[in-house]
Length: 459
Ligand code: IFM
Image (cartoon, rainbow, N blue to C red; front, side, top):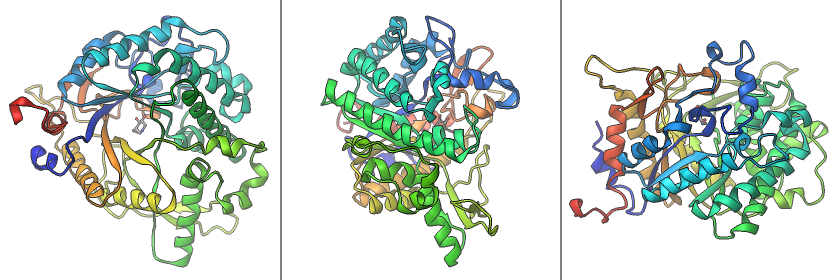
């Protein structure tokens, strides 16, 4: 087992360790204090979408247990907490009246973080779009980008003074491609045209959000969080290498291109431009406002091969066989080398600012043993291997400033419901009891070493 303290020695003293969650996955209280439905509430209620029709009604009951949860975060010895704000609590219909009680909840949360000396890394959108906005097409409608901008203004005006950093979006790939092309996430659409519209209006919303934040508080570090895919050609054949390039353009370039270069990848536009929405004058300049930081969420690698079907639609790729036999309980290949691969590729391709690993972690579903302890050694090993790669990134000169473990605790894993567990803390959903797992104790031993030189007892 990798020694946590030894690993700590490979990180700079001011490196930031944190834990992450997201609103819909932990809060519950979906009908309380003026919150209205999000697209995820509706999706959960539709048969066949979410495992056993699990929903977010109670989740980890964090809306009521937030103080206990902040104490838990403090216990972990981490310097920062990454959480998201639920738009349907703040502006329940997406546009229209502001719900003060929703803002009050995050007011309490932020004050609670400050009181405990924990930095607040807030995400403004982690997929809980107010359901009413589906009436305008949801993310496929341009007006949603402007509704988002007003929501951002509302949040940052009231809460921005206690945020240490803010992200406009979490994983646009999921809220665009997984949700509008593959139909796996809400709203469950399966159309390339819808996907391309959602992509452009999400990108535009990001840029409009950045403008709003900067106008209110130019000193608040603003960024965006991507689950950039680590794409590796299945074989060295020219076909597979070309397929990997197409996959890169489609899955990564669709977002990184506009945000960091002010343009969509050329081949993507050539092949799919006829299905894209009209790009208005000024859109690309808004989208490519310079950012202070960006976040990478990394879990696994994608092996990509050319689709042999001559009729295949762009990007015309298929999944190649896994290289490593080891998988987590959700079936994702474990490949720490893919972590380094994607970061190097992205810094080679784009002019990127400093970054954080805003999510990394593993799904293992073991529960308490006879002694009540949760022995999740494979998760601990996963963390150790990936954190070791983070130390390598720093040694290589990559501007990595912090790392957030996903997740503080087990929670609602979207279409998988509660059956898939990513927590450092076990949640008994019957009693809502939280029990720190073996991996959690290990992560605490690492995190509490930071900031270095700041612990009288460890001098
Ligand atoms: O649970 C999710 C999270 O909401 C976004 N990133 C990936 C995690 C694991 O699937």
